Structures are given as structure tokens and as C-alpha cells.
Amino acid sequence: MTGSLCLSRSIMAPPVAVSPLIKTARWSALLIGMLYGKQRFDHLKPIAEEERKVEEAEKKLREEQERIYKQLSEASSDTILK
Amino acid sequence: MAQKVQKLVAKVPTLLGSAVTYSKPRLATFWYYARVELVPPSPAEIPKAIEAAKGLIRSYQTGRLGQTTVKDAVSNGLVTTEVLMWFFIGECIGKGGLIGYNV
Image 1 (cartoon, each protein chain N blue to C red):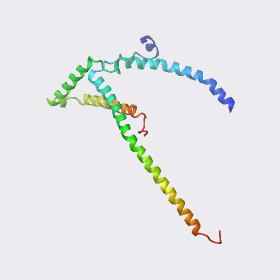
Image 2: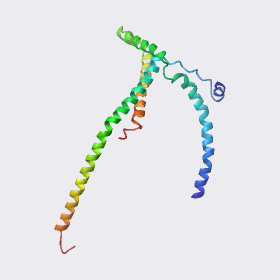
Image 3: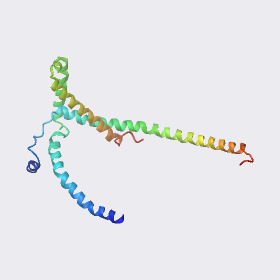
Image 4: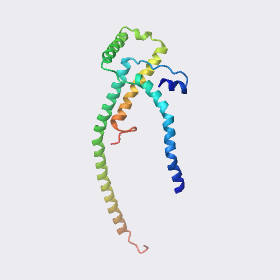
């Protein structure tokens, strides 16, 4: 594998031995991030569902009111100039 | 139109082949470095990491941290930032998306 590397580019630096502190910090940060993301998602999901239901109900109410308003306005605007 | 689509579909295997030939040595390079640098710590290294963390706290308490050169401080700051960014990558994996929570 090293042979094919030296062909295509200049001599590359050998891989660095990363300190164990940095390694543990990185991978624990990854783990904590995954847990935090999952937890926050599970927390936000029912809240969003609630909001969607409320929005749905309000929308129905608004459309109902608009329908009534339109009917009333059509009924009251009965003129011979239609 | 149909002929153009046919020509495009005929080109896909060659495109895939050239993509593979392009990416193979680069993937090999990546794997060559990642196998040493990006691996998770083995169980034997975790006590060493805890020791190093304690050493850090001690050097902060004795005030030796104030004697780091600016160059060292900048490079340490960059390494710390990189470690913190892994948290956000983990969060993206946990929430199942790149931008925002798809609730």
C-alpha cells in the first residue's frame, strides 16, 4: 500500500500517534453528541405533533368562519345589478 | 430526447469506473492515516487519558498553563475546537439529519 502511495505523490508524513486523551475526548464527545441529539429529538417530537394538531384545529375553525362570512356576504349583497 | 437519455445511461458504467479509479488511491490514503489516527481508544488507553486529564488540571492549578507559548496555545485551541466539533457530528447522527430536527 505504501508503494502505491509513493507513486502518485511526494513522500507523505507517517501517521501521527494521537495522544490517548484526545482520542477518548473525541469519541466520548461523539457518543455524548449522539445521545444528546436522540434525546432532544424525542423531546421535540411530541411538542411538534401537538403544534400540528392545534394548527389543524385552528385552520378548520378559520375555514368554517370564512365560509359563514362568505355565505352571509353573498346573501346580503343581493342586488339586481348581479 | 430518448436518445440523449440512452447515451447518458450508456455512459454511467464508464463514469462509475472512473470514479472508482479516482477514489481508490485517495481512500487508501485516508484509510492509511485513519487506521492510526482516528481509531477509538483501546481500553488500555483510557486510564492514560484520565491521567493526562488530571495532569492538565494540576498544571492549571499550579499556574503552569500561563507559561504556554502563544503558538502552543493556538494549536491546542485548534485541537480543542476539533474535539468539540465531534459533539455536533454526534448530534447530527442522533437526530437523524444534517440541518434541524425533522419532527
